[in-house]
Image (tube, rainbow, N blue to C red; front, side, top):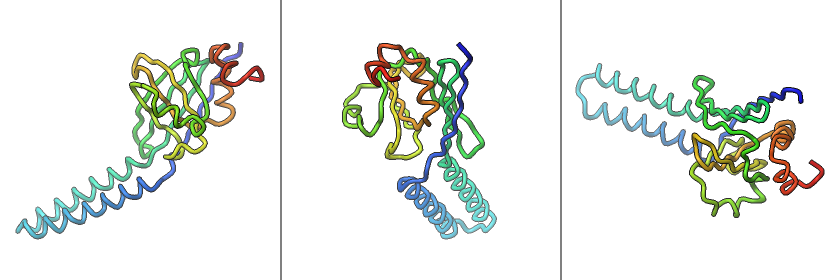
Length: 176
């Protein structure tokens, strides 16, 4: 079998929740600036507090600029979160042979709500899970994990190729 390597980047789209967080941070920075102006008599301290609050607000807002990287190498999947193209955090890794369940998220959303998992990782392009797939897998790092992600067709087919045969047939039929 030839080596298989697929890497995909998915940018998280800005949704209503993100906009609300931006507005709240902006208002908090302005409120802190006015409160400092009212209660601190020293202008240099006021200036320092306003600059520090503005920088902190910028950092908090920029942390909402998320991308997810999915990598599949010979049946091993890793998922990383990249914040503001500056810092990267490995969220999970697993082997496709350890997948317990998989399918389209929107079709199975109600059933998945009642599923007992230790970790839920929502690393999809859209906050509502539109067009996303889910995988349930047991990993050493995160325990029983529900992963909701946005694979393209190539990545999806590669994951299916490395799944246990009986599960692939059960979930997707003989055509896969």
